[in-house]
Amino acid sequence: MSESALVVGVTGIAGAAVAARLAERGWAVTGVSRSPSGLAGVRSVRVDLEDPAALETALADVAPTHVFLTAWSRRPTEAENIEVNAGIVRNVLAATGGGARHVALMTGLKHYLGPFEAYAAGAMPDTPFHEDEARLDVPNFYYAQEDELFAAAERHGFTWSVHRAHTVIGHAVGNAMNMGMTLAVYAEICRETGREFRFPGSETQWNGLTDMTDAGLLADQMIWAATTDGARNEAFNIANGDVFRWRWMWPRIAAMLGVTPAGFDGKPAPLERQMLDAAPMWRRIAERHGLREADVGRVASWWHTDSDLGRPIECLTDMSKSRKAGFTGYTSTVDAFARLFETLRAERIIPAGVRS
Image (tube, rainbow, N blue to C red):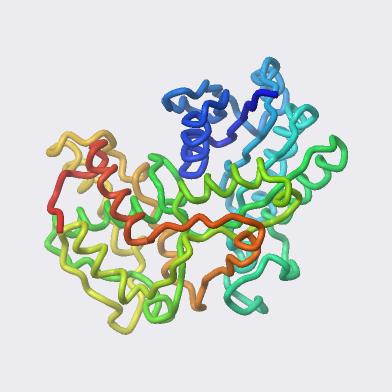
């Protein structure tokens, strides 16, 4: 049987990587999002994922063998996050789940750290995080998404996998959680203003160990789990396979972006506070360099980078489970940042700038 995929959230960091990987392998790929994807080899369907009737109509002629769920929508409260994001999973699987053989769901480390309203607060498992940790005793939209997935799998008989990524490095304009692009924009504004490229986060993050996830590696694991018998009906952490300290990584990122680094100086300096004047400044930068996106809100997510870099705890994941099951993918985090910055330059998202 030929393989066909529905990638939900195809314009996001993870969804774009999954769709590109599948198209390269010759799969028939349909990508769903609110805006057209523009990816080669991917049929684009624009639809509101929160509208079940519109979704059913839009996907009436789509019969995927595999579904990849990478979309989410941020809301002001966790109760709203649960309602909306569990609803997205429910709506998609109601429209397509009956015929799919496998459904892969991307979540993240808030599974272990807690939701935005209780992030890194209260009792949490020790690091590195393992997939068999009990759920935290707080409402969490990741749990609600999983429950919708499990219930639909029971009804329809498809297999499933869950992929818990940590701070994904990848390219997607307009994405709400995009540290790599945010740091590139921050560096350019520092160059424009003569500011130092100051680490904005906590002492714990500056000195402690951490890891990250390249979007391509995440895509590889999702496709591996969807096509490997021994990997089905399992949840997996996914990180690059190396660990680092920000005090080591920060000057290397600064060198790639051609700015002067400044480390942790005793207290956090959140980007949301530092970048209050960023919008008009970025507009001028974009106009002068002929960049594709002049709206800083579509290329930088200050709040998300502050959340990750401001954590009061060490944060890294254990990859043993998928390694034992046969997934041996690895990428260097330094290389992942370097690839991203070169892509951003080539696509005129950031200026050509100064390279190390």
